[in-house]
Amino acid sequence: MKRLAALALFLVLFAALPARAEYPFASGEKLSYDLYWTFIRAGTATLETLPGAEAEGQTALHFRALAKSTPFVDKFYRVRDQIQSWVDPRVTRSLLYQKDQSEGDYVRNYVIRFNPQGNMAFRYSKGALKNAVLTQPGTFDPLSMLFLFRTKPLSVGFEFAAPVTDGDKAVVGKARVVRRETISTPAGEFDTFLVEPEIKDIGGVFRKSPSATLQVWITADARRIPVRVKSKVIVGSFSMDLTAYEGPKQ
Image 1 (cartoon, rainbow, N blue to C red):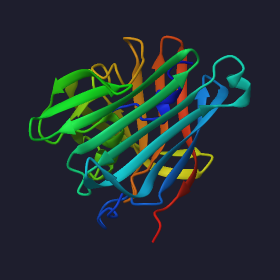
Image 2: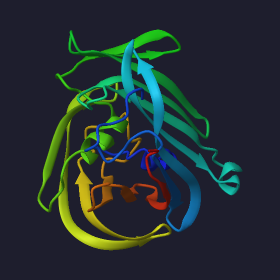
Image 3: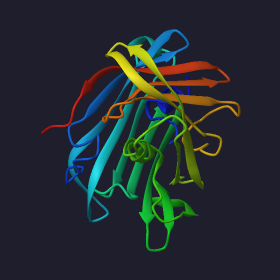
Image 4: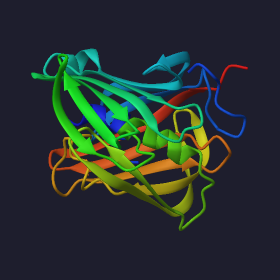
């Protein structure tokens, strides 16, 4: 159950001013999901674009992912996770990243601050500097990588790559569009692209087994909504299905 929240956070790989018109997301968008461990409904999750924000003294877009276990699962493994990301309004780099993770007896809270002038990312926990990594220009955090991916027009065979850091290491995150297929979730039937991100180098995002796999289904329309996520890890399989969609506020 330790990877429950990772699915809600796309865990995968991959605001003050509203996103530009060509972006499929903007303030007010909210995606809601059910989380499953094998066949057990283990929790719920949301993915939101929040209203006007500022980060590191700059205007920013603000994304938030939340995950929590059901009352039944709470009895033996309580999950309450929140991840927040602030990026520049043109979605060219991360400004700030915050992760508050509480899963059973595992608790981890930290912040990543980005210094584009020095191409560095600094990870802080409880106000103390814990790590610093050298980054490439235009580096993203794990959550904002999903939103960056959503800005790209998709087609079968499309390959995506962008620099990303989890505060422990900096790598080039990659994903590939494998095929197009129609799937059904509690929110309805969707024409989607199946995307397979590479997750082997993102250990700080995915508390995973070495052979873990990740698949994400994203709608083939202009919204590019992630409607399903599946992962196989050493303790079983996890999945996430869209239950509701609220579009950006006009």
